[in-house]
Image 1 (cartoon, rainbow, N blue to C red):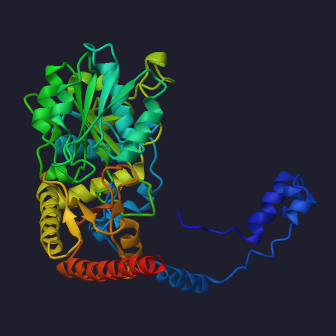
Image 2 (cartoon, rainbow, N blue to C red):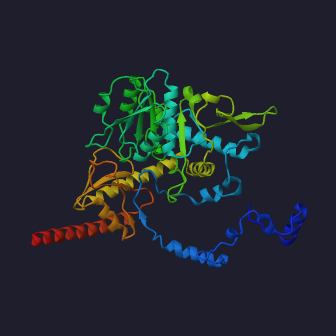
Image 3 (cartoon, helix red, strand yellow):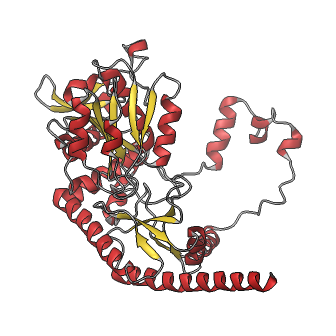
Length: 468
C-alpha cells in the first residue's frame, strides 16, 4: 500500500482521543540523553530527487561486472513481467496462509507452484517451499531417516561432490540428532562420485544423497547410483538444479524406481542474484512417504455448492495435532520468491525452460572450446557437464581473479579452499545470458592476466637468483 501521511487534523484528533497534549509526550519514557543524542555523522534529510541522483551515482560504483560465477547462485534472463507481477501488492507481502479460507489467491498460486515443481522433478508431491537449498537438503535427510523403516542405523552417505556449503548446513542441522554423515570421495579423473568407494561401504545405510549436476558442474551417473542405493534398501535423495531438470532426466525417473526425495535451490527459476539472497528451497517426494514431508501442501477441492476452492491439506506442525511426532516447523514458505518462480515457469513453459537449459549448455561448450587456446589453463574433469566447468591454472587462482576483476570480470569461484587436492582450480559458470563477445572478452583478458603474472613470476625468480 502506498504511504499516506497523516494530516495535522488526523494527529490532533488522535491526541485528543487518547488524552495526550502532543506527540513528544508519547515518548517521555525514553531518557532525554537518548532522545537528543549527538547524530552529527548522520546527514540531514534530502529531497527525493537528490536521493535518486545519489543512488544512481552509488550504483555506478558497482561497475557492471560480467559474472562467470555460479557455485549455487546463477544469473539467468528473467522476463520483465515476472517481477512486475510479483511486486504487486497482492503478492509482495505474501506469507504463510494461516487463515486459509481467506487466502484463496495465495493458495491457488502455491497449488500451481507445487504442480509445476512435482512435474519438473517427476515425483508425486511438492511442498510449498522451504528457506533455501541447503536447509532443504537437511530437511530431506531428516525426512529420509523418519521414512526408511528398513534402516535403524541413521547413516546417510554424503558425496564430496555435494556443494560444500550444503554439507556444512546439513552437518549443523542433523549433527546433534544421532545421524551419521558418511563422506563419499569423488573420482579425480571424471569429477563424479566414486562408485568404487561407494561399494566398499558396508552395513545398514539409511539414504544416499545424489547431486545433479554436482558442485563441479559434472553430471553424475544417477541411474547406477540410484539402483545401488535401492539395492541396499537405502532411500535416494536427489539435490538438483531445477532448470537443469527441464533438460536432464527427472529424479523420479532415475534408475529402476526413481529417487525417493528431490530437493534443491529454487533461485534459478526467476530469482535474480541479489547479494546473497533471499532464495528458497524446494522439496518433492513420492506419495508413500508424504506424511514425512515438512512444511505444508495445498490441495484443490470443491465446496458444498460445487465451487472450486483451495485448502491446506497437510500442515502437520507441532502446535496442531501431531505434537512430538510433528515434522519440522517450517513456518515460512518464502512466498514472494515462490510467486516469482511460479510466474517464471508459467511464462516460459516446459519448452521455454528446456531451451534456456540448452542455451546454457551450448554456451558452456563454446566457452570450453575458446579456452583451449589459452596457455596455462586446462579443464580437469572428463565427465559430462551442464553449465559449469572446473579449470586449473598454472598461476595462483586468487591472483588470476584479482587481475580479472580489474577488467570488470568476475572470473569464477576458487574451490581449493574446500578441495585441497584441486590446487589453483576455478569453477566457472556460463548461462544463456553470456554472449560470444562476453566469452571472447574473458579469454582475451585472461591471456593478458596470465602473461602479466608469468612475467612477474619470472622477474621475481631472476631477482632471487641475483640476490643469491
